[in-house]
Structures are given as C-alpha cells and as structure tokens.
Amino acid sequence: MPSVFSSEQKVEFDSPESLKRLGLIALATDLTSERDFARMFPLDQVGIFATRVAYQNPTTPENLRKMGPRLSAAAELILPGESLNAICYSCTAASFVIGDREVEESIHAARPGIPVVTPTKSARLAFSALGVQRIAVLTPYLPETSEPLFEFFSRYGFEITRMECFGLEDDREMARVSISSIVDAACRIDSPETEALFVSCTALPAVWAVEEIEQRIGKPVVSSNQASAWVMMHHAGISSLDGNYGKLFEMGIPENWRD
Image 1 (cartoon, rainbow, N blue to C red):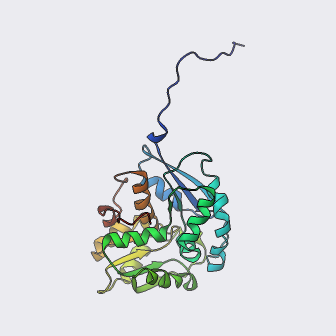
Image 2 (cartoon, rainbow, N blue to C red):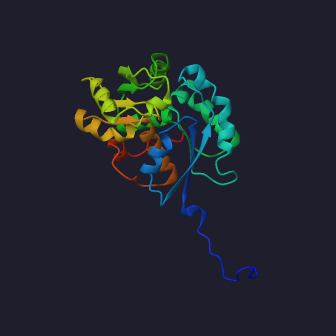
Image 3 (cartoon, rainbow, N blue to C red):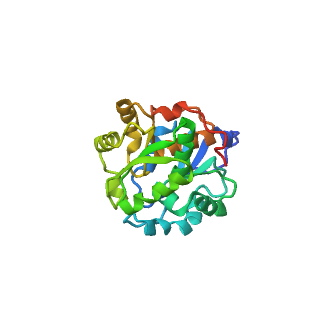
C-alpha cells in the first residue's frame, strides 16, 4: 500500500462571490419549482439550493396555513452559515393566505437579513413595473382557495376583471396540467378591460406558456415562477435568464422593490 501524504501544491480557491446563491423553499409535494428555476437561470452563474417544507394536500387555506410555523426550520437547512443572495418561498397560495410579511418574518427568524422572495409580492412588483392595474387571474385551485386572491390584489390597488380556476385540490395534479390547457384558459379569461393576466401557482408549469399567451392576446402575462425568477435575478445581480419568458423581462424593477 503506498504511503499517504499531503500535497505541497498550492490550492487555489474561487471567490465566494463567483457563484450567486439563491435559496428555494419548496413544498414537499412540489414537482415544478426546482425544474423551472434550474432551466431558467444560467447555472454557470447561479446555484439554486433547495429545501423542502412539510405539506399535505388538499390545497385548502387551512392546510396552507399549517406551513407558516415550519418555514424557519426549512430556511435554516439551506447552506447553514453560508451567505445567500435571496430565499424564495415557492408557494403562491400559502403566501397570500399566510401573508407576505409573516412569511418573511418566519424565514428571517432563521436567516436574518437575507432578502425573501414570494410569488405574491413578486407579482405585485411585476404589475407595477408593467404599469397595469386591471388584471385577469387564472388559478388551478379550488374556488375557496382562489377567493382570497380578490382581497389580496384589491388591498394593493389592483382590480380583478375576471377569474377562473381549474378546481384542483392536489398540487401534484396541478404540475401535470398541459401547456395547451393553460394557454386556452388564459386566453378565454381575457377581456377588453383587462390590461394583463396573472397565472397563479408555483406548481403549475405556466412559465412555458407565457410567451404563447402573450402572442395570442397581445398583453403582458405574469406567472408565479416567472415573477419570482425576475425578482431573484435582480437580487443576484443577473442581467438575463436562459430563454424568453415574456414582456416582464424587458422591464426594470420598481424603486420600492425592497420595501
């Protein structure tokens, strides 16, 4: 057996800042978020570091609220002791049911000072950047899970012109909804008074439908994972993503985006 010895060759290290680090808190049942972000972000510049939070279907307001107390522990597991450019909590319905501020406080309890991204706040920023107020909304949820979106957007001065939901209760089924179904439903809820569309839910593979919907209706389309990625890229100082994900990526970030 040959002897084992330490090499005298000098070992060089890349700067910690050479790779941007983005944390992701995904639901235990999530089939979509990691896949979307891995395909959208330039992985030679960005690392997506994911953890999971316990969650059990059906997707009802009651079950969504149960995740609130679990977010701190989930955030603590993402590269402990290492810096992160941002942490995204990838659940739209839970973000508007629990509340953006409560989500941020729970994550900051474990990782203070790290910017927190939610799909709901990202959507608000997206519509502000696009200069629109009247939006149509498509969700995959049950009606009782979709209804709080009215109050959420109204609170921030947006008007929902039309809303449609697929009536699904399991986020694993939401992840299997076909792109053609998303496109057809989104185009159906468009109306003359609508300025933009919001396709809600991080489980829904809507990122890949945005470009076609925009081409068909001639209006901006915002989806949950698309809007979150748009905000995350600004936190990471990334100028562009891999691919075409709609008019939103032509827009600068609003001045109050960190508020």
